[in-house]
Image (tube, rainbow, N blue to C red):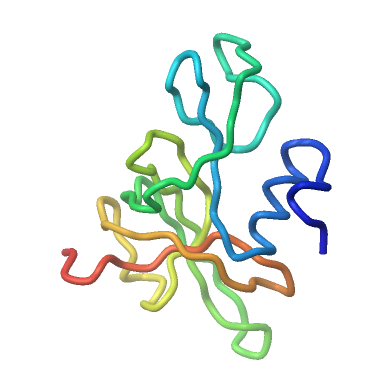
Length: 130
């Protein structure tokens, strides 16, 4: 496992944060815009003043699909695009509910857990959300 302080490059730093159980995204100091997936410069402006920040982790599903698999290979699961409250869009999974129950507009929150042997950002339904 790589320590964040030792990681070089934005993707390595992102993965090191995940290994610590932390979901982090980048934010431009000059524009205030949030950025995800990790990169060296802000899209559009090219600003290279990106810093790591912890997002609220809250968002809404903007698209979802169900991937069908045989039960012996893990069964069906969803793939969802989530618009974070901070602005960036994240491709992930919504867990804790049947894949068919994940709907556009569903309010979700992020958490870090193991997925196929590596830490990943996953989402679950916000309690009380419709």
